[in-house]
Length: 164
Image (cartoon, rainbow, N blue to C red; front, side, top):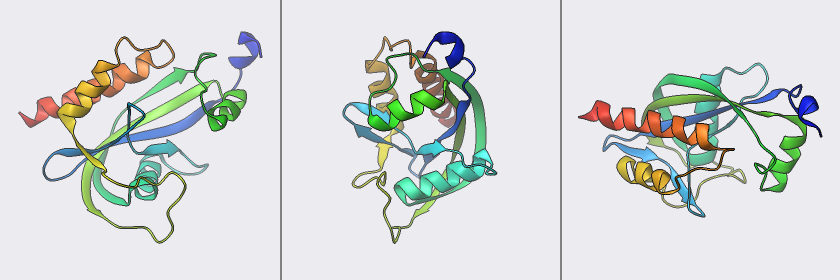
């Protein structure tokens, strides 16, 4: 698909959350050297805050509260973005993500009755300073994720700074 046609594709409306427990650990996991946070697509007729609460519960079992929006950004995917079959399919119908970022607190964890395919098994909490360090270790970032990683680091560093 040529560049002109790609620019006419819609953005995938998406969300990501940074949720902390009472010890100030963040809900995150490492997968193949990449730090992941709860989040995902926002359904039609669903608000972004509703979506991050739903996605977080589906993926991690965490019940979150005090959810506050941090910001929104648009990420345009380049030709090297799609790695998985799921991403390759999305690449054909979206030009990128419109990402909504949130922060909040973990109230508790509930084990879901049915675990979706993207449910996080194992450890779900990480030290926030370790998370920042692990993301920074991957710098310089590929062009297709540079702005996204910069936004993540900005939000995470603000959380750490606010704790001092």
